[in-house]
Image 1 (cartoon, rainbow, N blue to C red):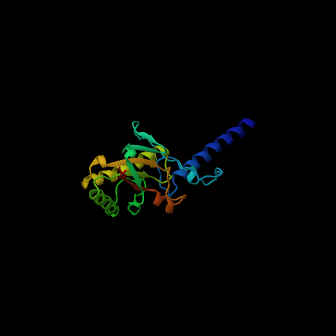
Image 2 (tube, helix red, strand yellow):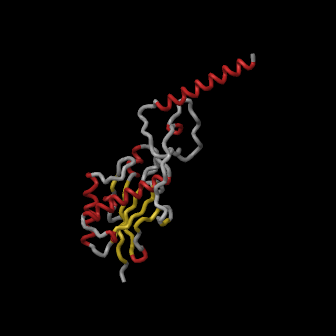
Image 3 (cartoon, rainbow, N blue to C red):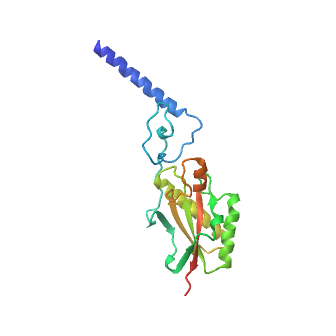
Length: 206
């Protein structure tokens, strides 16, 4: 009798497990993202019967960050400029910060006029250079976000080169998700964190 009861319980467990998997697969309104979501700082979330974002299966990406990249504190320098001869100025291009769509590195048409402002300033000041910083929101793995930040910065760099700025005047660095512009765990913050920022590099006076 005990053996029959055990077999019934085992069969019931299989049915419940299959049902749970089916429910997760049929969740609507959820966009799969590359890499697992990380919870906000604080106590770990408790599991809920309905699943929730933390329980959703999401694909884990291959870390495509180049092995030859040079670490620069929390960022990865891709096409660097020797800053020893320059003074950095974030204020000059503060209003020219460009923003990207979710999981996308293409410069949007609406953002190109900002890049044109950067290009015109560089043309008018031929001794200056610029470093483009690629940033991401918190979603996705650290490795994926470093790679995405790289693609965003390089995309902006290619545009500057296409409008006449020499490549050696445009440095690139990716910070991934490590330097959010706004702290938050919703779309309002994420929109501001998917960005490219410009650091003007002015030569030191002799």
